[in-house]
Figure 1: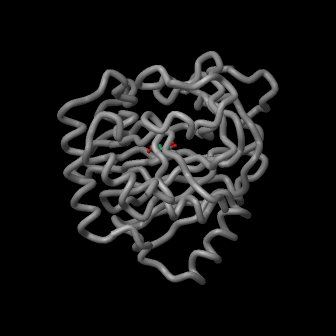
Figure 2: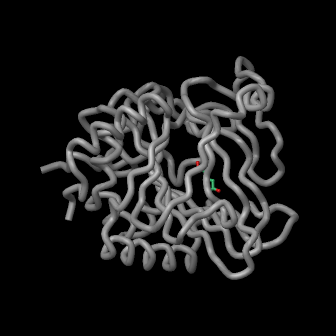
Figure 3: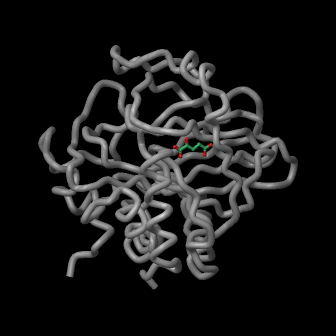
Length: 272
Ligand SMILES: O=C(O)CCC(=O)C(=O)O
């Protein structure tokens, strides 16, 4: 069940695209059994939110559910993270020998949720140091621009202020970061819109700028699960106003994240 349903040439081409653009869409990676598994896991998590669950819908109506560290709270998510092809996929895109799960999250925009997700990149939100990190974003519904497709700015590696998803306000944790809006406006032709189907995986670097449309349709849900994965060089580096952990890690700052295997399991290769 762990073998990637995808050819070697295709992975090599995708890894090159990931290295150049900071984002790549791999089509048809997950089979119907995994999609069914993840759909059921997501229902379970929505019915029993963790203390970190939030609704980012803002004032415009609808609901934008988010919840984190699902593998710590639900065996079904842990099974997906450790046994699906996603860990290997991330390792191949990052070009690393092994990958560790930082967090896995649900991101559900219910019908009639016009709130857009603002431009941001993920690394400044995370209590981590290092560059070898990515997300694998997995849609469970057909995702078009009308229901919340993701958009990316080609390329990765620059650092900007994180912003709150609901208010759009700047969280200003990194004074050296640059003006995000001016940067996007300077290069509008570099925006990549990623419409996707269930089974596809969108892999993007933690320093690739992205945003998402709102879900403006009255009946279609936009359910997605995102796994955040890191290579061996990424360390625990808490800073003011980064996202919380579900519980205190058994890790000193500066230590590789994968040292606390219970909180941050290795996904690929699995321990013997
Ligand atoms: O699902 C969304 O609307 C935003 C997703 C996102 O920003 C992320 O996964 O990092």
